[in-house]
Image (cartoon, rainbow, N blue to C red):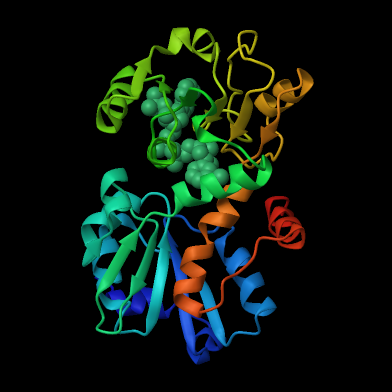
Length: 295
Ligand code: NAP
């Protein structure tokens, strides 16, 4: 069996080894991740002597690898598919948000070598929504959440904590919507997949947190006839940036928000914790990261 240090070392270039501060993203596979492009941009923009590396780590090697990363000098790391749930159990401690969601996407190593896990997806979601629709008020009406997977859980907690008065959760697998609604509490209710269009009546926000609409996936089949035309439509999918759902929403005059901004904003907290400066999400950064979707 390969030693965990060697699994990491063979993925580090000389320039990474020489960098003063090193962070990275762990997934399996990892080649598709936009995070190295994103953090690389911020490192250059802020002239930081640092590196952010993609690390391909198989699930059976995950726990052993993250055990050795602090002593190998890592300041922290992001965790992506399929390790986010495993990461919750593997950190020294997780904050309340990550514990509620059941998943960690950002880990910071303390001076004493402890690993602290958090989940920044909900923060990224709300920042993206607020930037896309300035003045968006969570209290303005009920919200519909389509999906009950990992991303949906972050969104559900973010909306509940932000103060939406009612959350209708629709998911193909009903039991997952029911479990999530139960965890959120009184403001949330599961709605059957067949009633997904009826659930749009009277809402102020609808969020697609399924993988439907992604390149290579079928579109989200959900007629919008009952959706008020002032309701915000937010798709978490960012490849393509304008999904079929957003196109249909725009055609009937609904304000829309795409998913790329969530990816950019969720990364801010990790970058600031590992490298120091508060990074900003600019149109130039957005274009640079979006260009990575096309390659
Ligand atoms: P996940 O945990 O695997 O959940 C997938 C969700 O999609 C589940 O609700 C699943 O329903 C549903 N789904 C999949 N195929 C379906 C189908 N054919 N018909 C109906 N429902 C279907 O994935 P995730 O991590 O939550 O990611 C979901 C999406 O959000 C992805 O497109 C991902 O790229 C995007 N995302 C974006 C960001 C961002 O920063 N913008 C962050 C995270 C995720 P079942 O429960 O019935 O299987």
